[in-house]
Structure formats: C-alpha cells, structure tokens
Length: 41
Image 1 (tube, rainbow, N blue to C red):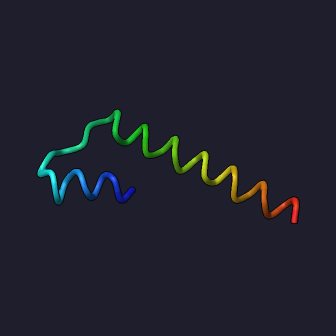
Image 2: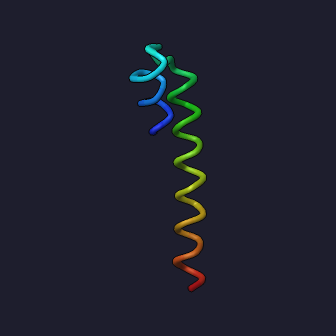
C-alpha cells in the first residue's frame, strides 16, 4: 500500500486499476504467509 502512496504523493501520478490489483495480490500473498506461519507454530 505504501507504493500507492508513493505513486500519488511523490511521483504525482494517479493509480489505476492495475495498481490496485497488484497491491491486492501482494497483500493476499503476505496474508497467506503470515497465516501459514501462525498455524505451524
């Protein structure tokens, strides 16, 4: 999500649907890793 903030605040660009989809995939992947680690430990 910080990458979207960087895009808007620093680069002065607006994000599109592909940026949102990419960020969502990254968050989903991180969630899978964190949830998997909790169940194993």
